[in-house]
Image (tube, rainbow, N blue to C red; front, top):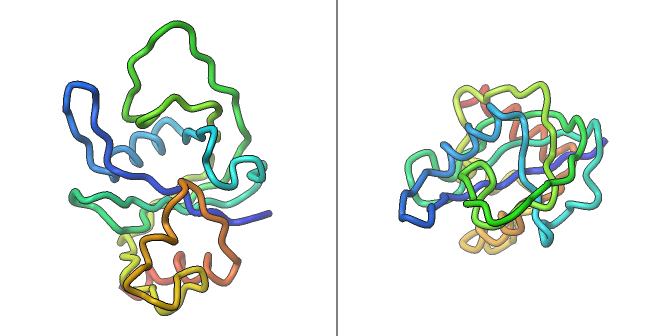
Length: 156
């Protein structure tokens, strides 16, 4: 079993409608699936039984927070026929496969990453550059980092 952060950003439709990352994340959790793209980091290593924590980035309200945890139930190949408009659920490019999620639990309250920067091993030494650690769509994390994130909700 491995631990990952699923990273979500704000989404804009082709006609300019913008949804905050937290709205996109909540829609994906409600659908119990998360898109994976051709270049998503760690896409090939994710397996059934892995644990994920959902992080909403972006610039809109609800940003820079860990919001929920879930378990990976499996992966499903994406099917696409013809030209279809991308939805907020899918993101800004066509998914090539979907993670099926189960046992989603909200972190109440959500956990600001800013409160954890000094405690997470994957954050660069230069804390002002912490955002680079949240690029790539999916980040693998240690059990210790998982515990820092999930248990810190009780400290907020």
